[in-house]
Amino acid sequence: MVSEMGDAQQEIATPHRFFIDSPTVAGARVPLSVPQSHHLGRVLRLRPGAQVELLDGRVVIARVTVRP
Image 1 (cartoon, helix red, strand yellow):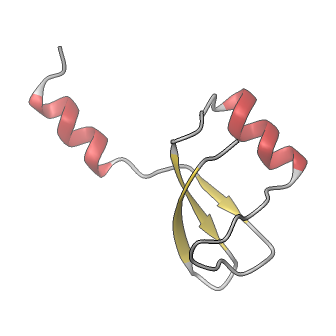
Image 2: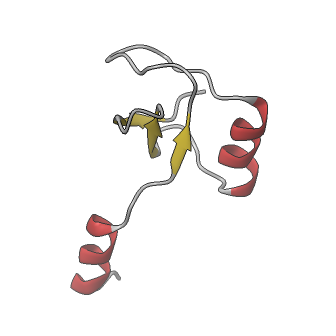
């Protein structure tokens, strides 16, 4: 059972952020570096369908879905 407060906390939680070298394009696949992929899959244990944010150094944030 999840309390209402638990639901509210999940809504305001900031997704994990990854910095990338290339600009993001809507609908495009963006490859992560080997260390980023390791961190995402092994350290954070995120799975396909998880939401993360990508930052391209120009303060552009793209919320993306993890795919295999």
